[in-house]
Image (cartoon, rainbow, N blue to C red; front, top):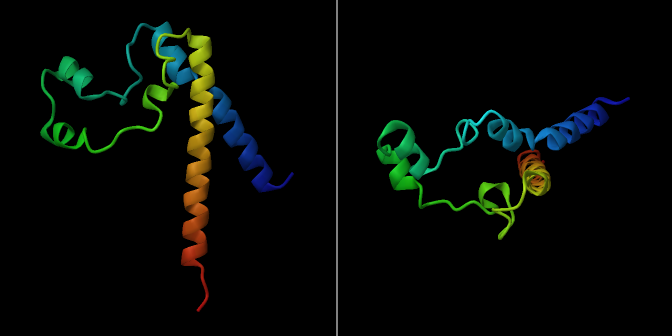
Length: 110
């Protein structure tokens, strides 16, 4: 089996495991996944919102907020797992596309 095939199998496995980021914090009653806090959660956790986070939080809006489709926020975890997997697939396609375009641009021979 070629290295590239093993790589894509690994990526596929990680995509399938991506709902663990949703299921494990819920199972252990841990709240949000570590590091995925918004400004409001940061306020609750540490008592204030860091200046940089406060200033930059309005700059970027996630295309799929909370890894869920619009209107799916209250669906059961099994449905949200599908949205997590979909988000992972989109993320992989975007990353591969950016790397491919950069590779084409940087390897251009003049």
